Length: 150
Image 1 (cartoon, one colour):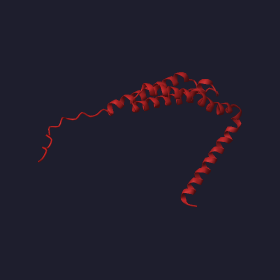
Image 2: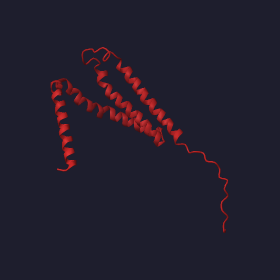
Image 3: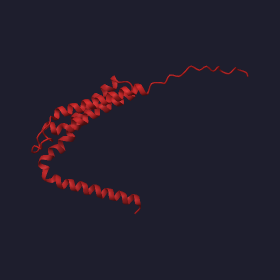
Image 4: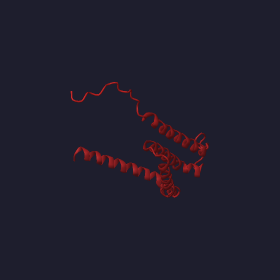
C-alpha cells in the first residue's frame, strides 16, 4: 500500500469513527431530532433555495457590473445562510433549560443585526469595486512619433 492509499484509508476510518460517535450520541435524541434532520433539507430546498434563486435573478437584472453582482450575490447568500441557521432558535427559542446568558437573548434582533452587517459588508465591497477598478489616468505623451522613411 502506498502512502496516498494509507492516508485515504486513515481519513475514511477517522470519518467513519466520527460519524459513528455522533450517531451513538444522536440515537437517544432521535425522536425529537428527526424533525430537524428531515425538515432542514426540505425547508432549504423548498423555501430558501428558490427564494435566493429568484432574488439572484432579480439582482442580476438590476446590477449589471459582474464584480458588483458577485458582491450582491455574496450578501444575499450570506443573509440566507444566517436566516437558515437561526430558524431553530426562532422557532423554538427555549429548547433546553435556561442557561443564563445563553438562551435569554432576542434571537430575532440578533438575526436582523447580523443580516444588516452582512448586507453592509457586501455594499462596501461592491462600492470598493468602483474605487479599485477605475482606469488610472495617464499623462499625455510628449514624444513625437518617429518620422516615416528615416
